[in-house]
Length: 97
Image (cartoon, rainbow, N blue to C red; front, top):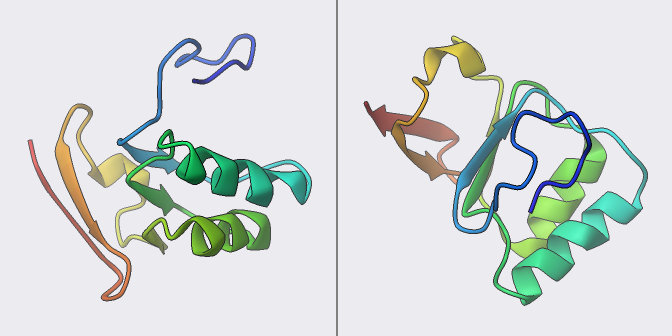
């Protein structure tokens, strides 16, 4: 659940979603938070970043969360509410509006 005050998604669960955000912030504990989310069944199904940072990448690897970055049209190319498929091995993202 997103708990950051003032965040537009505050109160929303990220479990099972495709979590798309520009880049990460924070310390190395972020990697372990993603790992703990996965162990507890609360992790996102996939992550899309504009610019993947080592902390987010490490957490995704530890938690076995597919992750892709550097989309041609950035995150703005994905329509809000779309059903998104992420293939981390192929580095591809597709969606249906």
